[in-house]
Image (cartoon, rainbow, N blue to C red):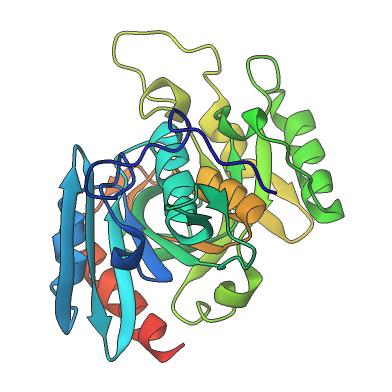
Length: 291
């Protein structure tokens, strides 16, 4: 018999909802959009035909509704890989753990999880206000090193080349994971494609200098020039690699779509990032509704 998961490991509140998200299993759709900014959840759900669920606990906001008959949840994750660790594990638990018996279900549900976020472009030909789909998430944070993870041959070669090129493995061990192939194929026209690098912070890890000196002052420059076969680094942000890595381990199909608000090569910034993100939201929803 499968052993029950202890109350200290799977925390369920008094209304039968998982602890951080405050969402019950029936309140979550199988297709999920994640956004870093909790306020952006409403900017997504305003395009739903109807909203059936609205939940909020701390920075975690969830709206579930339908778009052209397709049930979709939008979840505000907050910023960074640490928040993604919470969200991805709890989304999976809501679908794949029986909350009554506290055991993993025999039949598992594969979720479709799409991130809609903002990013900095690392290529001059990927301008502000354009959309980038991450073919891979390459993490220079440390999250996935706490999980047992296996890479395919392409991922291993990419990672080895990246480590040799950047010499970044002194402080933490970078990791890589691919986008979900069954969802990636629907997001081609109108998008730039490339590797998305996920950073553990906004300032030093992304090469910004205010009052503190940097241990890797040439990191951003090296990311822009990295090449391996047909692969290059398109952009960087703070969530994608954690979503891809955990999603792959848990058996979900994940994709990260980011609107470029800053181009770190041309030193330009979007004049109206909110409008650009709104266009991305509408375009992504139109594709999702048709899948």
